[in-house]
Image 1 (cartoon, rainbow, N blue to C red):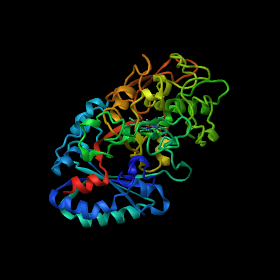
Image 2: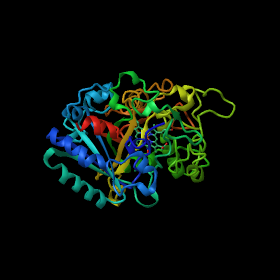
Image 3: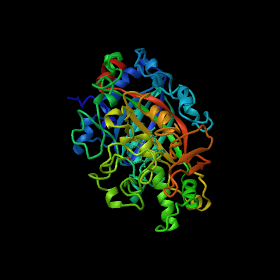
Image 4: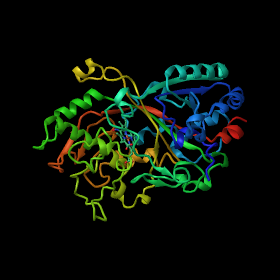
Length: 444
Ligand code: N7H
């Protein structure tokens, strides 16, 4: 069975706090850093076991992960056998649809970031106190390169991302960890998420110390929310039974594949069903097959467009059995930035940055995040020819994107999106090692 006291807590369960800081650093003095990593940081690293029990959760949870250049800085030269990780996210930019680095946070343009510390708590004060304490211990052996403060949205919007949609509904159940999957949840081999475990496609070519670590993809994804809302308002789906406002809501829901409440459009095709959205036993229980069907009808988008974000990134029965899909990720991101202001809403224009601090874990960056972005979301022929881009995260190097299937009254109609509602501000690829790897390899 899995040694959950050795696996960093964010990977399988998620730190799930209302505030989370991503602190990106460079290592200035490797010898000193190694010593302090062992004496001061390792005891603070929050394990899966600790997070599982409310009484053992620390006030501020901490996880740490390293980039390829960070491992090199620590003199760890073993090949982890993950090409995107080895090159870093900047070198991978051509595979991600980003229009070069024009929109990237300058600190992500390069390979200077050696690691990231994730701090999660109920308050920003707690996080700042913990960070100050860590910084005083680490002193000059690291430098801060960049940080991003994430925060759950307030009030009823808690758990919803900035476009307004409930997030965090569908993550795979990892064998050996989650033995109680809900209906419709993908059950994936342990090694699809954790390196060195059964089902890891590179099992035989990993250094022993990498076992029970996972690749952490970080992306700062800006969302232009007033512009997104204006687009929906301007393009309502025209169905006699619906008001224009409902027609706009329907368009938004079909772009995601879920309503704001989380209800899947495949199960609630016309209007939101908040009871369904909140019902864990039903809100993931669909395959894109209708009762009696054994294969998806390749022309039927009446319930859910093939291009819908959740369908592009997890096609369920579109590609046959779920076990044929080896491209699952565990998502653990958090929104960042303030609520839309009255002035932004009135002018339909973003003036303050907000978005998603996107985090996901997988045992292969190439089969996980990178595949979902490149081979599915950005592939206009996936899952069928002519489907077009994922309207949410699909990226065409800044050029306009054609999306098919959004209008249920005319499914062959293409809708052209002139602007990207999600803009990549860049990021980095990291490896989140086990605690024993930190103790016995990275800190010696
Ligand atoms: Fe997505 N959104 O609000 O539109 N995502 N996502 N995502 N996403 C999901 O099912 C969103 C992004 C996946 O299992 C939901 O838990 C936004 C990237 C996957 O059926 C919503 C951004 C990648 C799933 C959003 C963003 C993915 C998923 C429904 C960027 C990978 C699960 C909630 C700003 C490359 C699919 C849920 C399944 C669900 C949104 C990014 C992947 C609401 C706004 C970059 C695999």
